[in-house]
Amino acid sequence: MKATATKARAARLTSLTEDLANIPEDAPFRVRLHYLFSQIEKEFEQLYLENQNLQEKLENATSNRESLTSHEPRERERYGAGAVMPALATGGSSLTAATPSTSTQADEVGASFLAAASSTHKSLKAKLSSATGGSKVKASNKIKAQTSRIVSSFKAQTVVASVVREFGGHKDGIWQVAAKTGQPIIGTASADHTACIWGIESARCLLQYQGHAGSVNSIKFHQNRDLVLTGSGDGTAHIWQAAVNWEVTKKGHSSEEELDDSDEQVEDRDRVDTLRTPLCEFAGPGGHLSVVVAADWLSSMDQIITGSWDRTAILWDVETGQPLQPLTGHDHELTHVSAHPTQRLVVTASRDTTFRLWDFRDPIPAVSVFQGHTETVTSSVFARDDKVVSGSDDRTIKVWELRNMRSALATIRTDSSVNRLAVSTGGIIAIPHDNRQIRLFDLNGQRVARLPRTSRQGHRRMVSSVAWAEEPLLNCDLFSCGFDRRVFGWSIVLPKDN
Image (cartoon, rainbow, N blue to C red; front, side, top):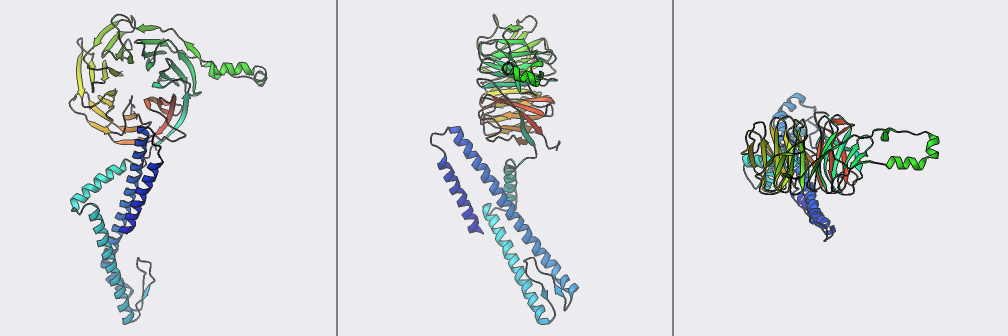
């Protein structure tokens, strides 16, 4: 058995070497690294199966030995002289104990079987002990528990996830996606200098905003009104009217009209309403001096917060369009800003490896600094139960409590940089990665699932942002966007829903 396992392991290593040889030498570093991680995952799965197989054999051998030693005398008494003994677990034929000589033969066979079972048990035990370095029971149990935790992260989950909608039309990468509460629409912000409003049912662009002169880096819907807030690389933030024309998608034609006006129908179907003028522009004296990377509505909806590469965040008045208060303190460019849904709280993330909590509930704002990441903090968002979740280029996601900024409650370690994450009302963290993956974790740091990504579904380039729908919108629970210029609507059924 040892020789067979050694040959199987050697075969896997040979196969891995052959697969590596098939990767082009000029392949990007991330592609090669991603491939190596997939091979490691397969190896873990095979090791887990081998471990399970050995454990089953050991348990079977032990149970057979105990069964034989405890039940054989009683079996002989029950069947008596001249009776037929049942076949043993080895699959041999039954033995007839009709005479003293045949009874002696049965004893010899039973003894030989016990000896074989004992040697098998010792052999398996020796192999398992040698595999763990000959350590004692405590050490082996500890290693077994650690291995189970590692392998469990690769095992199939019971979450059912699939792509049910796909949106396409942007001419460059998409920075952010947002879902509108109570309406079947989503919004996207793109590097092609536009923002779009999409109908979820038709998967068509209903309105395109062209008012910015630079990349549109963020998009947020007003909670109650048909207003949208966008931040741009032109150094400004805009609020614009998101009144969509639903008749375009609902308009029908008779068969005669289809024959007579087919050209007009094609033109009407491909037509997209455009908007170039904002209701309010946030710029000018007291405004930002560089790219506005993110913007969000405060809970009262009468103020907004913007974050910029000029290392500051600014609180603005929506009605007047004037800056109310600059927020300074970060040592490097800001990467994200986010407001609390019900309280006057704001978090700002920065390349200085920190994020800050700003409390506007008192006349004099209070600020708290959260330190714990080792590289750029790419996003920080509020979650239920007074928690904040932060993601970073250091490949970790940390869950914090607002009352304790010294240490994180949970740390999630991944294999790729983290982009703009989102937390559902149920406490599920959706994590978009540079390596095209999307993972789901809970607020305790436990893995829930990894969304499927194949040649037919999933993103082909970096996933830049995700957004949960507060209520499922036409079977879409989660939306994701990336630099493959595509947006996906995902249907996600969690284990408790199954």
